[in-house]
Image (cartoon, rainbow, N blue to C red; front, side, top):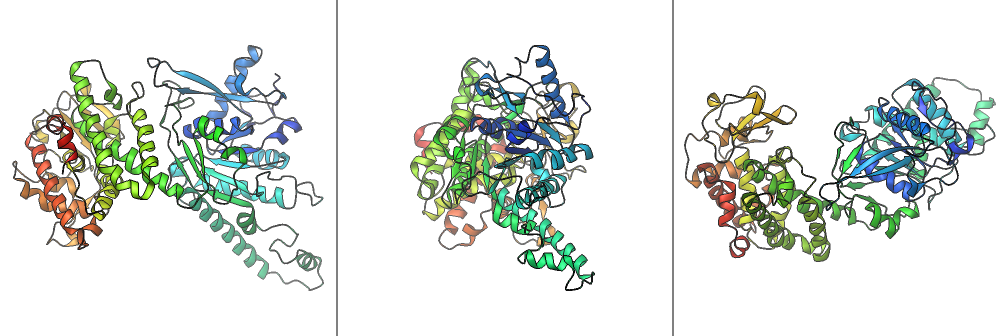
Length: 626
């Protein structure tokens, strides 16, 4: 194994790309962004499929410096430490590497570390770094099969975001290299070896319809530039016999006038933007400053890619790739939507159903669901898992199987259940509760809607899940906070008022940006953007849901809560069940749901704890009945 010379060995270099022509030309995939999911799922899959990817940050150079440090250390050790011998490059190509930690289900929490190779690192955050990518890397590549995107949801928030503009610049350079060549002789310097000859763009950020979104952004950029060129050309007066006019005629009518594709045509004919679903829980190794991903074992569907026309590299569609890396290619219309729907209903739905219950019960991490540390912890874990199993078996499964199939729906839960009770990879239950009002509609609402359409009532597990969300969103009092942060009370603590809270900083734990809890004093903080309008009120007088829930001065009978709970269940950013509430065929089921949730909620705010109620529900007969 041999390390080849880099463009510069200095830590202040603009990039870590190989200088040898054969090394540059061997690079065939580009990853824009260095997100932990991208590095723990997409890049290992690319390496396993014998691609040679480079990783390029949109801002900063932290990943590049991290790789540089590993390279320097390995050079001092004869190059042995940073080589992944399972993927060793026998041809002696330049290679960097990084680490990925995985926490196995067994082994007592012992972490396994994989050394993942990559074939260069760069940054778009400096002029020099961008120049290296556009004018040194891309023109010297023989083939480009795939561009991976991992820039966070914020990076894809608008067409004007830096990450989106950077992708546009890279694709424009690819258009130039694939269309008219960079050598000046008209020959293309870059090809695409994919089955249909189309460059695949695969996003690993958790953004709905990410492929369609990126395509729209790129087409907007192309249309804007074409319009600017058109305006510029209209201002020039050219003689019909001018060389420029002649070249445009010889260009066979395309917009560039030189025989090459315009950027718009390139995007339409030579690039595919794939919609995706991502699902591997990934954090970071303590003390690594985000450089080392810490992940759960690869799930069955870590990265699902819609590929309706067979554009993906064939190696990405193989069973071996699916089994080892969790990369699933969906070739039929509607399959990806089914995967997303099942993820929302099964994995996300049960996650939400568990999180509010556990947080209120002072169970701080999901790994307590496999706890055997004490009789009390085991009993709590057993109750919650019985509740979640019933929620799936008697509600989610019957609702989903007609649309998604019994076998597929059950397989999703079996895979998720194993991940949920991972004994050494717990997630913060308080963190999961964020945006709980909307999650009730997004994750649990579809199950309710399908049950009603089948003329079935919901049972107590669904009722309990909705009531638990509302209980969590009930503040100590009805005061409007100046900072938008409310305070609730934990099970087993006195409700009191905000004036009673001492806010002992020593026992206060921050679980999200600006949000904390204090187990000793029995309180927690939360935000809620959902505003509701009780019947008879003007829509102009919508009130934050927590303030209505907190407005009852004393414990009331269930009927007192029905109006507020009905308003929540109707709201689009709440329960999102307006359609079934107004449909004559399902209205009766909805009215029953309102009364049932109100009854359960009344018990919760009266002081009956989550675990006490679950214990009463724990028999199979009670959980499966309505």
